[in-house]
Structure formats: C-alpha cells, structure tokens
Amino acid sequence: MTSPAATPAPGPRNAITDVPGLRVGQAGDTRLRSGVSVVVGDRPFVAGVHVMGGAPGTRETDLLAPDKTVEQVDALVLSGGSAFGLDAASGVADGLREMGRGFAVGPARVPIVPGAILFDLLNGGDKDWHDNPYKALGRAALDAAGPDVALGSVGAGLGAMTANLKGGLGSASLVLPSGHVVGALVAVNAVGQATMGDGPAFWAAPWEIGDEFGGLGPGTPDPWPATKLSQHASTTIGIVATDAALTQAQATRLATAAHDGMAHALVPSHTAMDGDLIFAAATGGRAVSGPTELVALGHAGAICVARAIARGIYHATPAPGDPLPCWTERFGRR
Image 1 (spheres, helix red, strand yellow):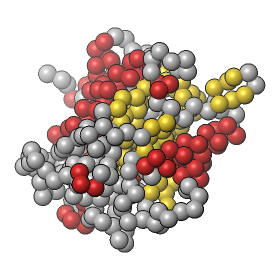
Image 2: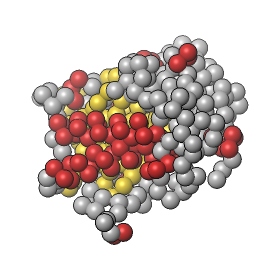
Image 3: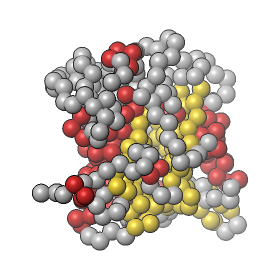
Image 4: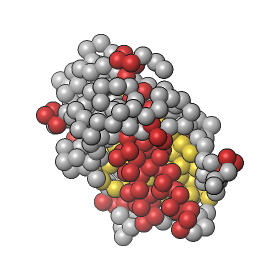
C-alpha cells in the first residue's frame, strides 16, 4: 500500500511551469477569438511528439524523431487559427533570434520552434484579416513568458470549443516520489465532450486532486456523447513536460503515454476529425534511474493531461456572441 508521503501531489503552481526552467507566454485577440500559447525554456531542451488525431496541423515536428540531427528545441507553440496559426512559430523564432537563441550553424543562429494548431475559424470571431495576425501573436506570447499560467479562455484556448461547452487552456502538475516534476499544458478544442452527458461532472474526475475542477466526483458515464463532427472544427493539442533527463526516444515515449490523458478526459478522443497531438519536453535537470521511473513519468504525464483538460473547461469564461456556453454559465461555480 502506498503511504501518504509517497503520493504524488501538484507543484506550487499546479502548472507546467512547476518544471524548473520552463516559462509560459500567452497572447490573444478577443475580436479574432483566437490566440497563442508558448512554452519556452531558459535553455534548449529535448523534445518529442506523438500525433494520434487524423487531421493534424504542425510545424517542424519531423525533426523531433529520434533519428534526426537536431536533438533540442528552444520553444514549443500551441496556436489557434488552423493553418494560418502555424505562422505564430515564426514570431516566436524571430524573438528568440533577437535574444541570440538558436541552433548554431557557423555564425548563424536558427531557433528551433515546433508548433501545432487547432481549428477555431468557425467560432464567431472576425476572421476577415488582411495580414495574418498569428506571427504578431506568437511574438507577443513569447514576450509575455513567465512563471504564472492563466487558465480558461486565454492563449491557444481563447476560441476553443468542445461538443457541448466552450473549450479552454488548462494546465496541471505532479511532483513524484522520485522528486521528478511533470506538468502539462493543453488547449482543448475537441470533437467530443469533457463532461459526462448533460451533467457537470468531468470524464477526468477520477484523476482530480482536491477540487481543482469543482470536486464534483464521478457522474453518470454516457458512452455515446454528443460530438461536433458536422463542423469539422476540432483538435486538442498539448505539451507534457518534465525535469527528467530523457533522450529524444524517451521523450517521444512520454508524449505517447500522455495521450492516455486525452482518452481519460475527452469522449470520444483521437478521432479522424481531430488533430490530437502532444509534445513532450524534458529539461534534463534530474537523472532517471531506470524503467520504473520512466513508467511513472508516462503515467504522471497522462494524469496531468487529463486534469489540465478539465481545468481548461472549468476555467473558461463567457464572451459576447459565444456559440456555446462555458461551464460556469451552464452549471455555476462549484
């Protein structure tokens, strides 16, 4: 039996920035109803990625494979805007270059900034722009990077929706008995639901710590919940991070394991019309002693992703003209 002292608990911020050396920046445009979230390291970090949705939109994810030359990245970007949002990473790269960051090629520096996007073009915002706004939003998010992480209708989750409720941006963390820290940042824009049926309870309820998303406990599972398949407007994207010293192959496995958190928290998940993707980031500050700790990191990543998804929905806030109600409008703060 596990002793209480050995039970993992959230870090002081209950956010991905509990992983030492990581900061989060966010920027959004309420008129556009879209935004960008950036995770940047104090120094380059090992990264991996795993895609399980059928309709992803990505930038520079091929170089994260374990057989590729570049082993570390400078930042990871989550953005709204569908394919237009991929330009957010360009704004982040410009800012990092000005800071002297990037992969050294002779005298040149090339910041390595993989990114992923979600589809939020049908959420009622003003999308009739002349110049793509996402590069500027990416730069603004980088400039805003710090230790605090706002939740709900912010950053890449500003214009997100699920099948029945407004989506959002969530984060969560765990400190393991080994001392390793694991955190997640997720923009929730799913085909399916984060809540059970027509009630307030979250699919992620078994993984909740305290009352971080209402403390409602389990609801009544509905195996066939509503979806927004007819809108073709989805994708949940996220980042799971740790201070463990991982190889690219191990980081890729961490990203793969963390996808279990989407299956715990969204029903259905990983559909043909989602672009569900999780990046993994490993800052390398703490050694891993063996396979037992690697397994624990993957399980913790899944738990953090599930909790982050529920927290993103729980903290979403209303705005005029929203196509869907947010959780608090429908059920009230618990």
